Image (cartoon, rainbow, N blue to C red; front, top):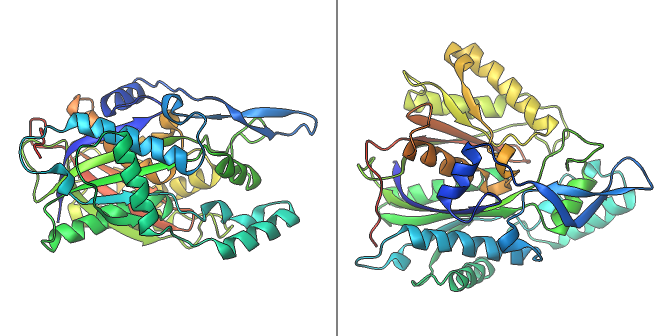
Amino acid sequence: MGANILAIGMVSALGLDWETCCAASRCGISRAAKLDHYKIQAGDPYAVELVVGHQVDLLTRGFEGRGRLLQLLAGALRDLRRAITPRRGDVGSLPFYLSLPAPHRTLTNIEITLDEELREEMRAKRAEIPAVQGLEAIEALLSQAADLAQWPYPVQLAAVSQSGHTATIDILDQCLKDMASGRISHAIVGAVDSLLDDQTLAWLGNTMRLKHAALATGLVPGEAAVFFVLSAGQSEPKCLAAIERLAFDQEDYSLESGKSPRGKGLSNVLRKIAGAADWPGTDSPWMLSDHNGEAYRANDWGWALQRLIASNPRFGEIQSWFPAITFGDTGGASTAVGVACAAAAWKRAYAPSPRCCISASSDGGRCAALLVAKPPFGEAQYYG
């Protein structure tokens, strides 16, 4: 069952609304800058340097952990409030489906940490921290964000996903299943993540994933929040984009496994999309990837492309967009950022194809893909 995206709210380092964020990204603008709150030792034992990241300065400067997420959620809700036009009924009666970073993620991939004492400390902490956060705490976070955003409706949290880069597609899957069962006809799906708090930056640095002068193939951290208003059913004349298909698979040679990637899981999930939706068909193959510049991600992407081209030569013509170049690695929000970029490309008529496949791979090996399509014509105007 598909769904239609009727409205989008977004904040990122490139702006505090969806249109500005995507227009700036389209122009190749990057606001990556040195983070004055975090330093790293890079090569020279007697010198330290500031890490570069894509920070939402006007919202998150000075905040850590939960506070950063709260500010990002409030900013995206504020933009969504502007994007919808209440007329009748109650937008707040729509359930929220939310993607959040896992509370234990900074304790994963610890085996490659060079400091044995630090490894033991991380193992002990991992045994104490639950893999997922309780729904009550997350609902409180969302309610606080709604208060900050002056969201004029009640907040009802329906489901949460905390599965890393694939979290947005996982929570979309849950939402679409509830729509297919007839439980709901409309919903608000959101994603938020930040790799810029001190604890996360320390984890990325300790596991040799953070880009700096001595590690050119690391990732540049970012942060973002995105909300969509979804309606059930086939593509409507006035919507921003239509969700056609979701697919999932597993990569055995994951980042956390420490093994060299083979691209099998990623290529399998894209073939599932291609087989189920006749994609690319006559369309120009267009993809948005969560590839973030890491050597592991580059190898996984390269092997996956080789496998895809071997199965269908049309994939040799693929046009690939990498939002992390302008937004930074936005973690579990990266797929939502990709959907927002595709919808903006159709709205402003610079998209290379009427359909776009957005892929995501989690550190644990879960792979997912989402196929979205251009609306028939017009632009959405959502009335609650």
